[in-house]
Amino acid sequence: MPTPRTHDERVAAARLRLQQEFQMWLSTGGHTGPHLIPVAFVGDGDAIVTATGENSRTVRNMRETGRARVAVGTTSDVVMVDTTLDGLVPVPEVASDVANRFAAVSHDPRQMPGYVYIRLLPRRIQVWNGFHEFPGRTVMLKGEWLSDPVD
Image (cartoon, rainbow, N blue to C red; front, side):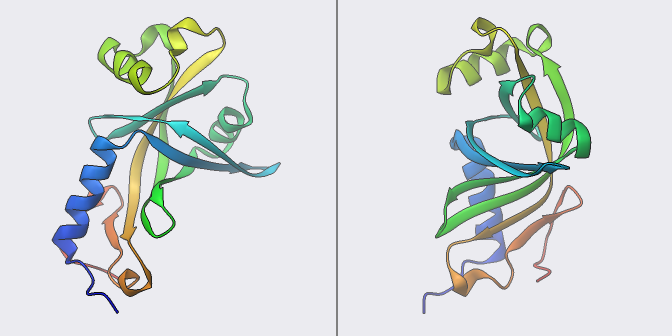
């Protein structure tokens, strides 16, 4: 069995993935049940920013619960992020650097009527690249990076 990465290595891996990757799975849920979509994203400080149709099921679920789960990576090497909604940002109100970076990795919501940006704040982050890394996989809790593993 492979040797698990240290806690610090996992924190670094999570930070790197969230800075360099640009595609994620976004899962929301509401009274109509779970909903999962692939979307592009960019980082904005501590927030994860994506965009989708303002009348979409994703946005309805976010308005209802204010929570989402994000997965970046593959099933064998994943960063799993539980988030809370920081805001649904109308297209004209998003910072231009965020809009430009998003447009560079996806479509440009500024050119697509009916879109809204979604700002998500990480609350819990888990990192693992196989069963051998299940222990110690939580690197963030309550929005704070941990200095030691908790699981």
